[in-house]
Amino acid sequence: MARYLSLKGKLRSVGVTDTGRVREHNEDAISWDADIGLFVLADGMGGYNAGEVASGIAVKTIMNLVREAYDMQELVGTDKSSGLSRPGIILRDAIARANKIIHQTSKTQEKCEGMGTTVVAGLFYDNRVIVAHVGDSRMYRLRADRFEQVTLDHSLLQELVDRGFYTPEEAQRVTNKNYVTRALGVEPTVEVEIHEHPVQRGDYLVLCSDGLTDMVEDEDIHLTISTFGANLDTVAKQLVQLANDNGGRDNVSVILAQVTEPFPARKGILDRILGWFG
Image (cartoon, rainbow, N blue to C red; front, side, top):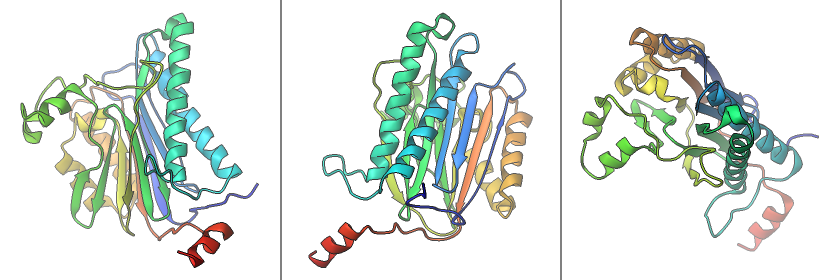
């Protein structure tokens, strides 16, 4: 079945994941489909190898459910109660479904008890990016020369920053940053934070696990993209190398996407008819 919307040729993208210098195995998981504009990164946690089970379930479930929705239906309309576009609802519901599967698995598989995962996902649609996240995996945006964090961590440290106990600069120097207050799989349901942001041609979006942001300052991430941005593969490899050179204490994962062309949504016949009477 032909896809209703294809972003083929509208985005440049690359992803890389690395075990790091200290951990024995990689509990991060990444996947993306640039043709539909979907990018997903998860950072698992739990005993045994359960963290990689959780992150793997999250990424696979989200990718599969969003792909199915794109292949089966038109992606037009907005939910008035939430203000989310139809693709935003699809992404949110896919993450909620992943949470349920991980939670059920942790309850029924002894070796998976207590597992969970953070997740950050970006879904490009109609000259916007829908950003959804749970936990402290992040998305950043570089537009022109302005580099900024798009997501706010669901973590104890972020709550302390919000309450004025630390400045953002002081928080970057805190050693124990990793107590998350929200994760997939911990409870039967989860609150997914989701926002929609306009994008412009030339924007870079960076999805990353805390294995990067704990080891590399935001300014150095910015400088790396600015220096090597013509080659996204080089940017990704350089960021992982920086994290490892600075200690590599955790798995490190990065997905990069750059908008190369606008991608307005095609309007269905009903939308066009309604538009005549708007």
